[in-house]
Amino acid sequence: MLLAASGCTAPGESVENDPVPKLQTITASEAILLTGLDPTLTIIDLRRADEYAAGHIPGAVNIDISSSFAEEAGRLDRDGSYLIYCAAGGKSSSALRMMGDLGFTEVYNLGGGISAWQRAGGSVAW
Image: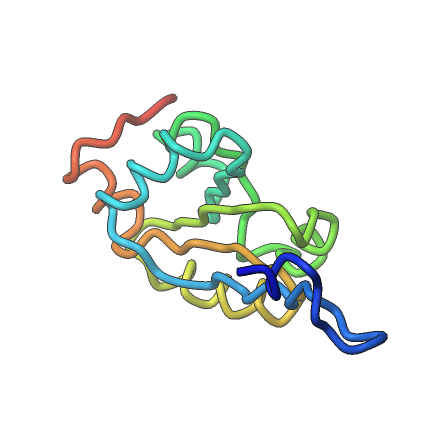
């Protein structure tokens, strides 16, 4: 225990590890839990504006994946935490890969999309 406290790293060696990216698909139940636990979480609805207006996860921002998603996502903080979703999970899987390629470190894809969210009892705003 004393060795750990005394700092036995070699000169120039870092004790901090690079953050391991968290890029994963989670269940609707996990997403509901995550939204309640992480107040810094940014929720992104990837559907068209009309779909977003018809009902979205409370607090979600709308960035349509069909438009210039990579450009819009490029303006976001890559070190932030994000929950992304679409209608059923297909487009958000593509967005998860794109965000990983852009260097984002914490992105959760809502498996099954907003449909799964509603089936799991998640609330929807208009």
